[in-house]
Image 1 (cartoon, rainbow, N blue to C red):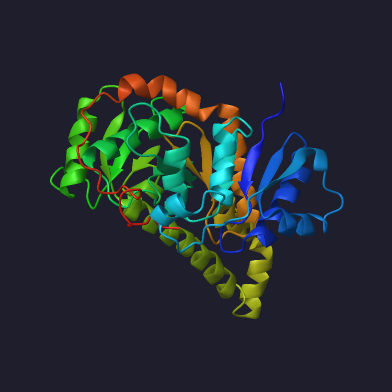
Image 2 (cartoon, rainbow, N blue to C red):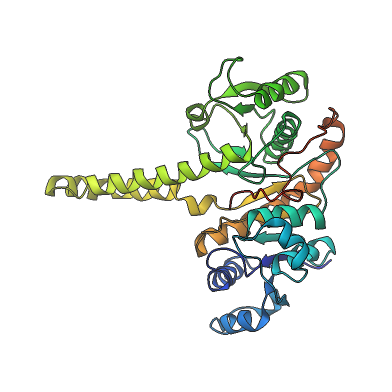
Length: 356
């Protein structure tokens, strides 16, 4: 059996192949079992690879795709007008069995729409959700959705909760605590969609539903899975990244204020370095799309080389866990509630784009 291959959309993101190719080459050097396929304009990719003569070309292939999707393009346009985009070709490689996972830092709305069209969703799933693990005081918490679905129905939030619970179980968490992110913990708080989703989860005996959770409770580690729509999740994720950067820089500034503070800072330097490493957003980069018939990982569009390496690592972890198969085995009998007739967040039907 041939080694699994991860297809890389090499033209996506804010920095494109000049960031993605070196990051991929370094991943190959660090993980001897890794096989990658760089998808994009082959002349550009070969020129960049030539700057890394030590790369193992037996584990790195180039797949030509002469079109790329801009970060500001509408998803509907990407679906119709660019059949040879690097993003689509990478997804088609997964569909056709030429690759077992896809990683892209490109346009989130286009990736969502193309992934649904090319790979299709698992039975019972309306829309995929983006999920990642965020650090808390008691260990990581899976947060979804992170921006793929700006508006969600109660049924879709219920589906996200089920998928998040199964994903947490695949990480070894027994009976993961599932909560809905809300503006308060009282049952009367929240909008109609969140309240209705709470009702669905309370009726689902297979889910260890804990009720509503506020943002501060999330970071205290009061849930293993936190569910929200993509609008809320994306703002929470990026706000927490900015806060972490502000805190570490503020602490460093305080330790440089005077001679005494510098001496104290020198003693605390190992702890400061550990704090900075623990809170560094790049190591948490890479959100998995749950609910697809294939593995797709979305990197932050502004991620640098370190962040993109983390996204490749996330795809490799999903491959090891065979996450789509685990989800398929559990979702068909868990997602039995009635499906909503409306789907206000469908980027394939409207021009409302998820966040990058």
